Image (cartoon, rainbow, N blue to C red; front, side):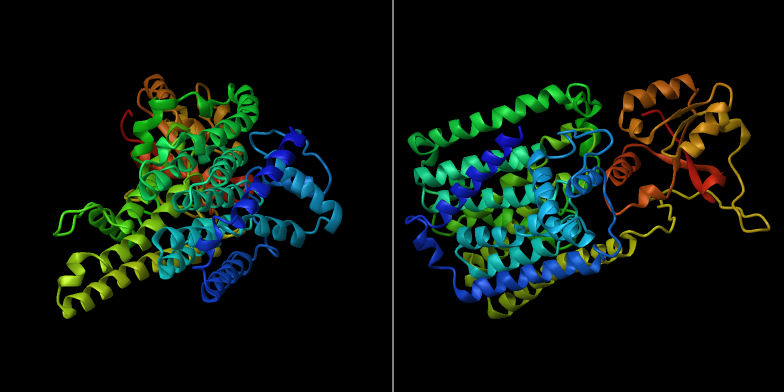
Length: 531
């Protein structure tokens, strides 16, 4: 698999380079000016400064789940449990091993490698949006929004396989635009092979990568799909390449609980607002709505849809497609939905251009035009402002060892009572100690298990409603959840569980449990009703 990953990565890189310099693509690149490249370069520098210095990624690096495995690779070692392909991507591991052998294993090298591998999404998405819309400022806006989005800014400096697969996805988007503008056999083959490579790096790119077909199908030359001689050879090559790691991963995944739920879990995931980022961001949602609305609005003289309209509808396909297969996966968070996120940002920028160039805008008064520009500009700034506020919050908590228990929205917190020395006192009623408890702290679960007939489970089991129902029935409706400071992490697995569990069930405060070994405490909530 190591040799295959090197060959697959090398082939993808060669095809990508050949596309960028192909004679068919040169007329497209002629529209990219030095000013455009300067804007994109400045955007990348801003992204570097934000990801590297705002989070103090070198001086106070916060390791994410499974990222330690890549640090072992950089040091030329293997983790105690060995390499697990579903948690440590083989090609990325080889890159860190090679860099470590050449440059050493310092934290600067570790973070710098992660940053260089995961930096390029703003440039690629900006170029894609500019070429698709044929408007430079649309590409600029898209690049800035992608560069300073909280999730992307955070994950750029982490070795965990989030940012590099997103770069491969963004490169796939760019090639799909080349296919839409200049459909050649080389462009189609490179597009499909690079899409397969993005899936090889991270399987949950599937929905977003498949959605890239909407760009040539909806915004490209009419009847693209009927020209099967252009894309079928590339499709077969990409499918053959992807089949090798897919069969290997299936054999590894059969015993993981995350892959046994499928459509049974869909209703719960649809209720979690985290799945719809950035559509929950003020301003961006309104711009996406306007873009979609105007993309189906015909002019006063009936005729074909405009180029910008077709571009908006192509971007819109990503919004539902990017959610899959993650909505069928019993652990997801913002890091799994970056394809949907970036497409929504591109749609917001393209939709703004569509409004400005619509017949309605052209025939309205100058006063209304001025007011429209101000409103749309305010929406865009609101989206940027909301992103900045979240980045500030993430930076405050990045690598912060100060215990901080998050609050459940719309739920009153248990009352904290301190003794004379300022230590927390237990306020959980004794009669609740025979309830079922979900907690990530063994310090809580071990003593809990010593109580006769008490039951303790890890918090990830709360993702399984059937288990919660069974526990509810066994314990006569008494199910508890102990919330600690790990749920306030910036991102990662515990944050994902937190986002899901607080949305799936309704809770009420039950009391406080001190953790003497850590000089800390957990807040305990009781499940209000049977799920």
